[in-house]
Amino acid sequence: MAAKKPVSITITGAGGQIGYALLFRIASGAMLGPDTPVRLNLLEIPQGLRAAEGAALELQDSAFPLLSHVEVTDDPAVAFGGANLALLVGARPRTAGMERADLLQANGGIFGPQGRAINDHAADDIRVVVVGNPANTNALIAASNAPDVPRDRFTALTRLDHNRALGQLSVAVDSPVGDLRGVTIWGNHSATQFPDVAHATAGGDSVPALLAGRLGGPEGARSWLVDEFIPRVAKRGAEIIEVRGSSSVASAASAAIDHVHDWVLGTADRGWTSAGLWSEGAYGVPEGVICSFPAVAEGGTWRVVEGLEIDLFARHRIDASVAELVEEREAVRSLGLI
Ligand SMILES: NC(=O)C1=CN([C@@H]2O[C@H](COP(=O)(O)OP(=O)(O)OC[C@H]3O[C@@H](n4cnc5c(N)ncnc54)[C@H](O)[C@@H]3O)[C@@H](O)[C@H]2O)C=CC1
Ligand SMILES: O=C([O-])CC(=O)C(=O)O
Image (spheres, rainbow, N blue to C red):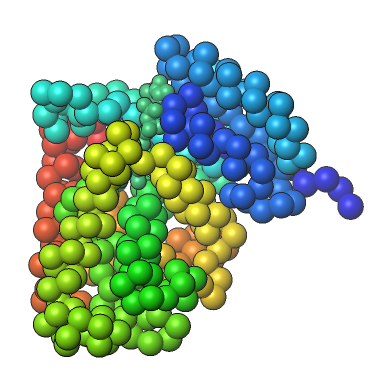
């Protein structure tokens, strides 16, 4: 049998923390499966090149049978040349005294040029996931600067929020995470996100009913969701920073791998997951923001799961997070970034 052609994967910010947690798992086959060789193109800024080069040395020392080549560069045209997949991790973190507009502008300087480089140099089947924050709006900037690439190839990572929700629910209803279905993260990867369990099941049983059974009825379940579950998931990033002394790294890398794995290989019979996708108007979300939706993937394409009943409580929460996405879009538009 002819050897499979390696999939060319660009990782930006490869010399950073999440990069270091990602590279070895991708090279081991965790993302694309045990029979798909990979070629890794690591993009860094000049200050980050040595760290990326060090990681490349360690990749060589790991002798991964699936790893065909590693390239380290600070030139986006080289890094995205022929790329089939791109994980955009490198971003400008918020520093003391920085307003949101400053952060959006600084990231516009990264994701605009990277979008153009993807447009001009990537392979026709390029698929992009943005991890670097603010992930949804950075993905919007990149997509808007890549007019020749179909919009639905640009996504933002909200799988970490989804996995966090599964982790919390697993404890709350005493069910293995693998038995949980029907959880959704709606909106922005920010504190306004809405982790929604109205349609969730555990081993086939309704999660709202299980919660009510454990928490003294529907009111107890509602209080737990509003006062504990939703804020815990939405603010988990801050909790990790406080406890660990630095932001989520391994869980973020793991979620990025889950996102790409499911996008390329499909969600099959595991039900829906959550992904930040270009809105075409589903659930009343305005077109042209990158919003987290319930989503399944098949044949390399994400599809929003439509037709879910949205009650008034959910509607308010979704609308609030979408309003933030629209505000961010207006801010980057007024800065001339999209
Ligand atoms: N969407 C999500 O669920 C999550 C997102 N994040 C975000 O991921 C991003 C990366 O986090 P870490 O790896 O911990 O940060 P880090 O600071 O350790 O690494 C970032 C790397 O990106 C590089 N970089 C900066 N500008 C670049 C550019 N223009 N091109 C290529 N590389 C560039 C830096 O040199 C650095 O090595 C942050 O924005 C963080 O907020 C973190 C956790 C979860
Ligand atoms: O909160 C942060 O700074 C990092 C992040 O996006 C997360 O952990 O969800």
